[in-house]
Image (cartoon, rainbow, N blue to C red; front, side):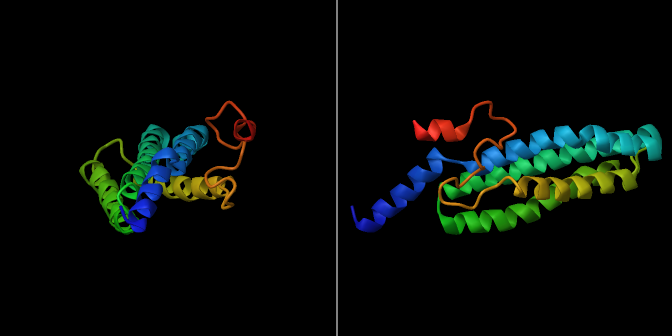
Length: 163
């Protein structure tokens, strides 16, 4: 076993032990549910029930998109950094294709309105990323989420780390 094998094993072991992208994606999905009433209400007020359904469809796509991105990163990081870089890049293009494939069959449906769908999709994607960026730490002490800011956690992570 050469020293380079140790480095690869350590990298893989670390990725298997901690997957902050999964925690961030779950937080984003929960935050999508938190902003859903506002986006659904805006769709309903300006476009009626068709706007409500179109906004709801966009919100589901947003949550699934974040979860798929995290799954791609988690899977590819276990292989190698080069595979991860490629998977993230091509995964982005593939997820754009999935969004397109989700819209094309329904674009002429009676219940679908493009304006509330597009507004909900864009505002929610960008708004949630900005919201979550305020809670993500780039420090070496807490490489994932800042302590106590996870939407899903019920305990204080800083208390767990000090034990």
